[in-house]
Image (cartoon, rainbow, N blue to C red):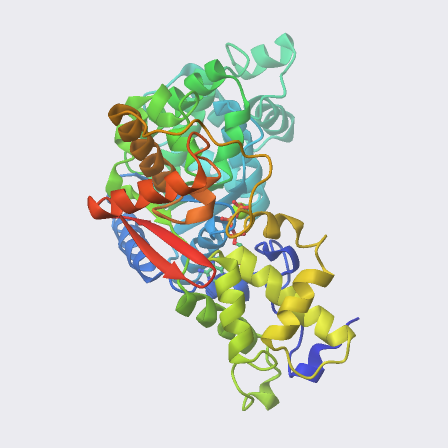
Length: 456
Ligand SMILES: Nc1ncnc2c1ncn2[C@@H]1O[C@H](COP(=O)(O)OP(=O)(O)OP(=O)(O)O)[C@@H](O)[C@H]1O
Ligand SMILES: [Mg+2]
């Protein structure tokens, strides 16, 4: 067991590999440490208040690139809702097993059972029998089976609803007309969400992470799934709030994105309900590192300098190198602290951070990949023939740059965009950006080691 007490810490506060520590014994403490996202917190607070007050269902979309904090934000919402709102049940799903309503229903049932128990479902179903509702026969009979509280009915009924299939005989016994298809699954899910609200007065907060994983499925499946989601949103008028976290490609992928395949769903996720997680600025990164250190300080040594064992210069360097991506900053801080401990160093300064970059090249490979390009020539890059690009090609390039920037949340290192604009040489690309700046489309901000491009 590494002994971080030398640094006045109960553990290495920075998750190795810089990912949110799901199911860690300190998960809640991490979830509280959401730094530099005050606007997001304010929006959430408003939405949760509205949700609790009985306002209609809502869908939020949380978009951000790799490591910008999507999972962290969902976990923040989950723990916040648990602490502050008795009548909101937050359910966190790490992705969906597939692009089907059936998958969503199964994940939902598993998670609800896991948290509140099967008894909760049975009671809910029996209380719901007093409420007059429309809906499919299968949904009604499923609820009846649950309400019977009789194991020989409850267990197969749940098996059916989770899409595991039943013998014809068993289905007939329960009065279920068909196996669970997509429209039945949607009906069951929306009915359950409504009942939880109408019977129990609790709203469900569905927090669905890594939705971009869906993009690996076929277009047709996705088309159906988006339609299913849209119908779900339209039919559940009051019972839920759904937060979908994803990389921006979910919206903007030209073949499989929501905007391309389902404009109707797209319009239900209006701009005001889309939150884009941009990189943090260097003050944000510094605040994040300090708050992680503070959270895991041994109480009796709290009088240490807040950055200890990091020097200010080391933190500035981490902030620069991370380019504002929390994951990058935490990963670097984590590895630096671990290496400092193993080498018996008292202090981590910027020189040591540089040594780590060299020493731990393999471990930091993904991280370092992001920083290629700026300053060094790419040998595989062939310049196109000289001469100015015709006007509309140039305009097309500008549009492309803007699209890329939008995808990246509005801010990006110049080098990162350049890697994706292969049509022109690097020099010409720089000139294009300057032109765009002069035309008021973007800002170019000088940072150490390069430029940051900001969409205006
Ligand atoms: N605003 C923040 N304050 C404190 N910690 C943060 C913040 N944003 C992100 N983190 C931390 O940075 C790391 C990366 O964030 P997270 O895992 O949430 O990113 P992500 O967007 O879900 O990435 P991926 O696309 O890979 O799923 C995690 O350790 C997380 O706890
Ligand atoms: Mg994540």
